[in-house]
Image (tube, helix red, strand yellow):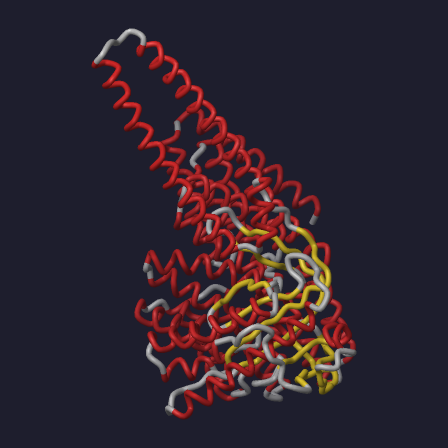
Length: 618
């Protein structure tokens, strides 16, 4: 295998050399055609399931585009290569190439490319279980695609967001996005994508416990995809169907489906699909008593997951993200320096102009002096008006900046022109999410739905501010804030719990009012986890203060594993406040959550009603 790889590398080297020579002889016009031919060959090989050939063709396209200096084609080739690397499970290299493409598209202001890269980066975070980051990048891509209005691009994002919500333990919300995706695909008549949508609907019904419906959709998906899709897509659908059959107790059928899917995935060297098949077969063989085969599948499963999601790989992905953020900040520093030089040059020219005007004063007499005085008076009035306008705009900008960033971060940004990402210990993350949101949204008009969400989130903002919490973001019907940011603060964990309880109390009181008027009401789950996070500014345009780390993902899991009208806290949060006499705790034992194993959890309540210190929250 090693000698074969060497021959392949040598062949690729000579091929690239020949392409460079051809470019020197025939020029850029034919080179663009050659790049497009390589990209078309890459797409054809990908559709046929030949990922190795597709990767080679994307590499050739990148070599030609680099020589031609065509930024748009370089970005396209990088995105194609990253897609193939993802299919092979090499997320680290794929993410590096996507950030190269992102830098290019930002430089040339290519909105379509930015949307594609945001979606692709979100997909990598999705596979790596960094759900908060995945939602953030999907949201950026969706904002662009909604402005563009192309149905096929929107359908792709609906499918990705649906799959993300499904993995976050919200299959009811995921169904809404998968159905939107299916409706668009049915209108276009794209059978391959219809098969993919059917598979996603099947896994949603599986998570909702409707195993008969799940099997129906997945078997329809496999039948459609066998006719209209390549082996890589069919193998993914077979793995999904195998898991559903396993959950329904049809062990023998699950083995048949997953073994077929594994053979296809091995032929394509598609590591993510192989990982799904290993997991299915390990569980199925174990239930059949085939211990040796089950152990082999477990070994392959652990190796695959370590390759895709190992600790060093996770550190590498975070390092790429932080390097990109630092580069954006360095660019901002350079622009600021150039702006200062430009202002200094203007000031120098203005000073020279004033000196010339002063010399002319001595050359003019009588009426000339009066005219000059009048001109200077008008100029002075103009300068004063300009200064007043500049001051108003500066005050407005500072107000907007403080509305986006914590005051210490905003001060650091104004003082140094940059704000360093930093690790903060003892941060308490609060996640909330409305229960049965999809069903309730069907009973409200879009205007009523947005008005009710706005009323709830305005109240949550006021409660968070009262308890000195830092609001991080809202995504859909989810609300995220944190105590102990941007600097650690004594008592922040207790304040976070008090804020969560106040939100639940406010929501219950509002529900009572709305029920009296026979109107739909929102009910909520809330989860809190305490631990270290990395906090900083994300992006260059429309930037925001954000946080990363396992503490964020664990807090999201606490919310998903909670109960409506309760506040669910982790063991780490409980240890921080267990001596606080204001709280009562109800141990839940160890609860199994996806991706985390079993976690100790507690419901927390107030011994007495906590009254706000100044005024009430409305």
